Length: 232
Image (tube, rainbow, N blue to C red):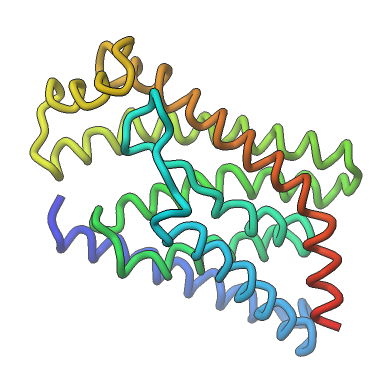
């Protein structure tokens, strides 16, 4: 992986965002001017909070017994609140704003940020789409469980087939060297494919996603109400 490839990935993401934004705002009668302004404000506010939780070093941290490259962070909570309160598109753009703010600080040639975006989209979008049609507490629980399952599948497959090979190539690590790093955290890990996937990546994401779901459920109503009062 070269710097040129990293730049190309970033440009492709920019083009993708531009096309989605153009499609969204070109839909005649989809949103009135007043609602469009509210939409932009919501995305800006929740996107800003999400970026802070994603970028500030002391707000993300490794967890004991898991490899150090798996970091615990809560940036998906504002995106979940925005998506549940104001629709999936709000959550989608909140995640894009968070990612764009982080891109200039990347140390993975933008690949890590794009991977995080993919994981978050797999977590939040299915949940938001389900909740949009089932706006009850029971519906919210089901939506969050659906999002959790989708995120676990996507993150597991992406790490095993894409991220582990990428980091080995990027940092010039052999499988044995990466395995040693993983075994420092958990000696039960036997290889850098499915073993680290099922013993490290999967349980780590279960814990992280469960924490995000719990906090989202606790703060959703009060945050939604407070923000609506602020807008009025």
